[in-house]
Length: 205
Image 1 (tube, rainbow, N blue to C red):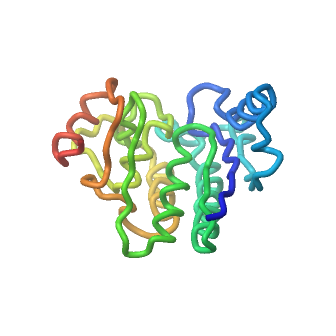
Image 2 (image 1 turned 30 degrees about the vertical axis):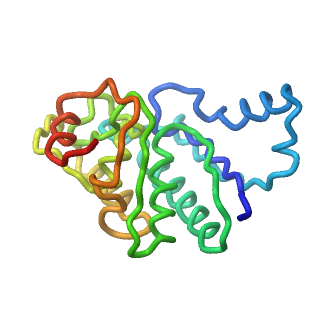
Image 3 (image 1 turned 90 degrees about the vertical axis):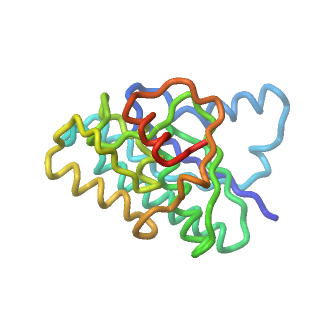
């Protein structure tokens, strides 16, 4: 099967800068090791929309979510296009919010088939604008992809934020892209009470 790299260098979802340098770092490391990977593998480079980070933020409980919608939509359709054409996409980020686009695109291509996700991370990323302590969307992708809402609501987001959140959830197909029983955590060690509640309620491993 043909393999294609997708450079998804968005760091809109992160609270600090630097995640967008992932692919650049890999290129330097490959060059130092004498690897010809980046000389032969075809790449698709997406517009990262990181310029929104320097604009006014209308959404303190989901920072710069407007730019994230544009980016994740592009990523989802790029993944979908590759998979439907028999190409295996490797998405290189970027912060953890790129999972929204990569999983949504995979689900579009899979249709009625279920997806499985192995989440290798110290954090659960199960917040929403209603529970987030930071407003950084990189802590929210799994809750969004499984369409989970936590009854322990501690935030009161503005209407604009929740409208944009609904738009973000609808990228690709409406509804959940992933079922809790099809998610496995590896390395999980740091999560808030609201995330623990969802893990226990849904029996996530």
